[in-house]
Image 1: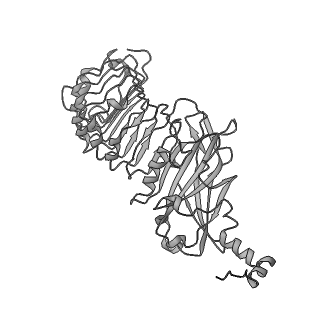
Image 2: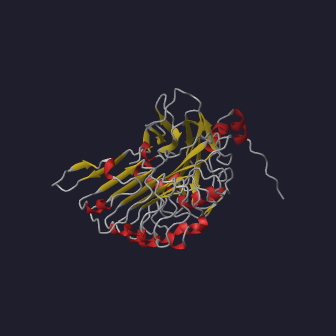
Image 3: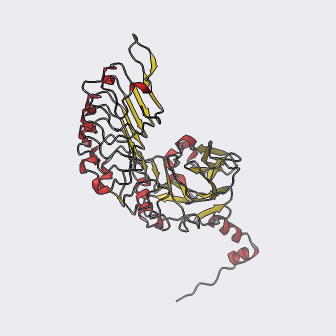
Length: 443
């Protein structure tokens, strides 16, 4: 029995034996599971943690129709047996930090109940099974984070036929591009690609996405309004599916990009909305920028709650508030390294999310800020890096090219064009100009 063995949990055995039993380490052969484990017909969950000497997962010689969750963490296995297809009711398969794992069997495509497949930090994995498309009727979550030898060219073409896939994590990989086939994942709502140091190209993304996380990708930037990442996000913001979208994108040492004209340092940003914003069909919504910079402060701890808030404010100073639940904010929780890379939390808030009773002339100001408790960070990366919000930005999104539509100026929060004209009219010089207009030239 390996000395570093930690625990195996076997739940819900036959009532004749026990309803909650731990399988003792002595029941294991040193380098493989006992074949007798297939006889546990009522077994629903099997977790093997820290069995670094366990190199072989034994052949499964008969159907195990109750097993739903198989969790292998820090084991020494090199491959799973093709007989894994006998786990006909398996829903969750997690292979975490199995550093000797080199491949997954093709028979994994026969697990027609599998909804979540996590193969994370398996550094020797180089290929995915050719028949993954057989899981298109069931697979919803796929986690390939930290599989650094898995390149985009090793992803089979039929991978993109996983039509029910909702969550894809390819963080901490060495991919150079996101294959164009990703556009076929029509139900994908979460894409995580944090800390991909070689990722340079990103094409059109599915319009179904509502969470996009790309922190720590040095070649992906939004410094210009023509950048690949911003162009991809903009297409999502402008899609017919108008919904709240959040993303974490790389930040720079200079803060929010200059092309975002409405920017403020401090604790909040407030702007006066364009006239008739509520009835302008070309106005789609708000892109909100929250610039996070790393903070060296031992008093700060990563934690919750911490979340962005935005408000509509009326001319008589009433307010209607929206906030984003902190538990949905994308954090680099699984990142094992340390980073000082700034980050921008970018939220898209569509106009259609504003109830009709607030879409009127009365509501003429918009404010955004971040709710953070004292001594808490507003964003965390892994377990050892804390970030705080340093500045804010707002960019108005229009159906047509935003360059052809007016953005309020930097001074718009206190002095719009309408207000400046009014001030000029009621100034002394304005009255003189009004009463004595310049003579018109005659032909």
